[in-house]
Image (cartoon, rainbow, N blue to C red; front, side, top):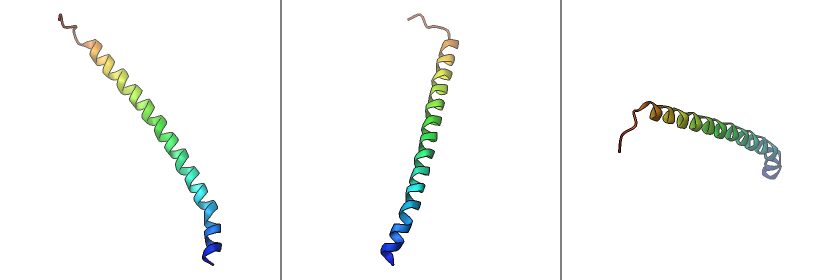
Amino acid sequence: MIGGRMIMEAPLADVELMTLRKRIDILEEQVRVLTAANLALVRSIENLRPASGA
């Protein structure tokens, strides 16, 4: 029955894999948003500093 069990578990593994891929997509989007927000914050802070007369 091991072969039959493998066949039955394959669709479940596919569903779990698709769920993980969706979660990764969501996390990647969150990383992009946070990176953009961080860059905007850094630029804002840099603009607050007086320009050095180099």
